[in-house]
Image 1 (cartoon, rainbow, N blue to C red):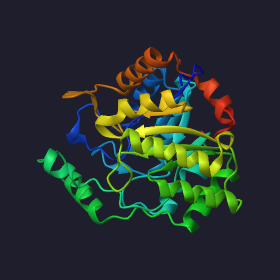
Image 2: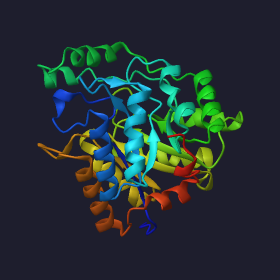
Image 3: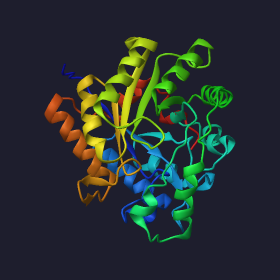
Image 4: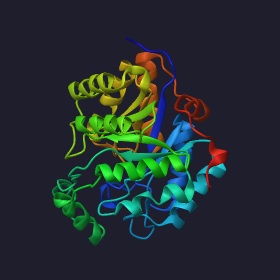
Length: 313
């Protein structure tokens, strides 16, 4: 079934997965992150998902001053919706991850829906030697790292986001995370309609293939009912465009691309910018379904966001 309404494209600008050795195009400094976000919006993204990095080494950071510098620059130049990470980087405590919400009161923030072994260790063999000493250590430590999101954590994140008028974007890395969301609704912590993002292709979570995408969608329909949730999808790595295009055909409200999730424009060719990835998925979806990218203000209306004038930056 072809759905002809507009689709929300999110650009995940830099993330905390890839390291500087993997691509010379990965944005590192607040200025680079802001420039990439603005250009991604110009290419068709309605939302930008923001992590921050140490500008000297490229290591993922939780420095609020760096966050403020990047997101203020974005807001000054663009109407794009800014979605801040609360996943942070590997090894960050929940308080460190969440502090961006009460500090900046963003329109939207990521909300990771369960604990998992979020592992990046296979990258070590693929990319050695590394430019910075921290890169190999960071990737190897993920092999024994549990990305902790207990129910106590989830309730704490819910409460903090709603207190600050921030829309939670539910990052579901596996089918069980959908059941976690259903429990939070039953317990009164999550309010419908919820916005779910199926995160597919991260080692430790569900694979990025079409059968699993359909399974996630059917499970969400069963648990929530189609009118009680909106959804988007991430296809990490080489399946990014296949998974996102299929989701658009299935009627997703959004899709996510970007250098956080995938470094390549096509096999063997590094993407030189987030804008290239946004432009490619926008063209694919339009050619196949006729769906055009939503503008930032259209995305705000679809998702029920408070507006950029009500943030604290």
